[in-house]
Image (cartoon, rainbow, N blue to C red; front, side, top):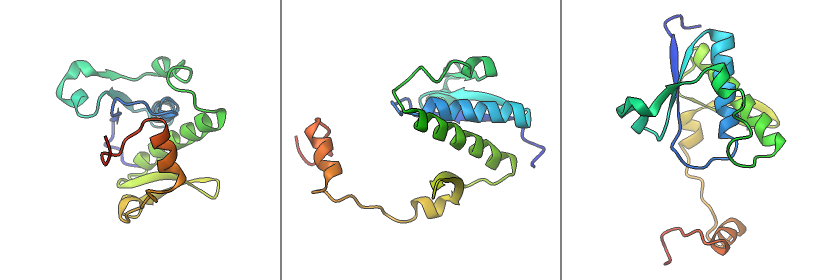
Length: 144
């Protein structure tokens, strides 16, 4: 375990992401309880790094009631997100950077970022996902 880590930051992009609160809670609890790290919450991506007032310390008390705030993920989503957060903190604790947490065959694992993003994953523009998104008003920049 790298002994030089004393603090970590958890950044978010500022948008709605069901299950994100559970991930944040999992990271904070594992970071504090398992590793003794200080955790900083960084809001709105890089804004929290540029403007210190948009950055705050995340304590156990701060994340105690975080799950009900936010979207409506299912209990499975909340548990999965918490498992992701704990795994992410464990990766940092082991010094395994440049990896992404994932679910494979029902087990929490990690993969190198190059494996996760190295191949373009295409979506069928005539498929159900795109058709459903367009039906509720989501645009992909190709239509007005």
